[in-house]
Image (tube, rainbow, N blue to C red; front, side):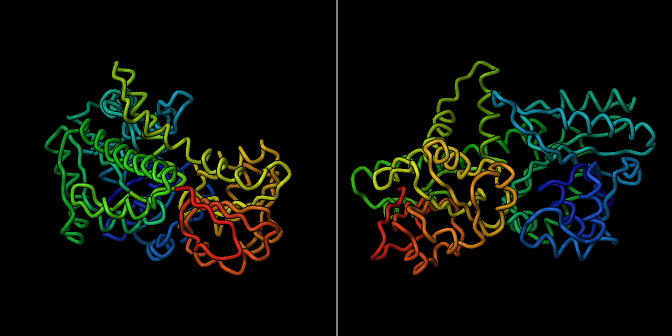
Length: 430
């Protein structure tokens, strides 16, 4: 089939390359000329394992990019893969989505044949039907369900493993309110379901598909926060939290995934999605106490890390190495990284901060241009009074003699990956 993807961020770029790999003809539409040029040159505009290879393989053949919305006219299906950031009170900001939808609607006014518009962005229930569809109708002069169809296809991509998550999914969720739209969506995903026969196919309504995405992320975020809460209690009692969490993870009703206690969750999805569903719940008069507690526990973890540091080193005037700036290993994304509130607190406390990350330093420097940065973990540790491990990159687990170069070898491990050894004062967060 011929597909158009509006937006070339993490989701848009990944699904475009993956759809091309499945045999579809794909065009990315984006307003950023640098991103368009990179894709047409066979280069990925983002750091994501496996994505460079797919784009290099398919660019100029089944994958191309443009700034011209008219490219949509030659396609059968358009996916809206645009960012929906949080505003100050947690609601999603739809301004980018609305602007793109207006442009898409104006373009569809020139199209005679049937077309399917699929929301791929994460939006709260009713958004596709009550915001996106009316804009499309107004600007195209056409009627949804008659002249074109709308659908919802939430993504479940984890940064650092997005390509494999798409091509080997646990589930594929297709939301549609018309039989024609549902049939078209199935045709788009048939090649994927043939390649990944164990994936569950969930066909549902549009609002249900929108909610499934939020429910999925809210549950996982809550599971992590519960694990952190339990681990914090373990630490107060001198109990090994890893042994406890490993044991309960053996229960088939619980499972071991997302029980890794530490400094908390970040990234582009969990913080935004939990805040958005909390705000949406309040809008309809419901108090989501569990999800509010989920966010509260997560916000406390970096503060606890600094409190543990203060038991050994006064941060005022101390040189503190922060190891790991990306929100998780395998990506250069620093959005809502737990290093951000931690570095903020260290700077406020008067610490001399030096940061290091294998790939995310440039992005973190945009937020904190005035702290020091090292080009290796060893360089960051050299002369430091303390080290805080924030992201669980494999190279940090291999650190050993590098700690000997510290002025005072105090290590607070937020991910419990450093091996405790003689010669360092080691504290795990949990």
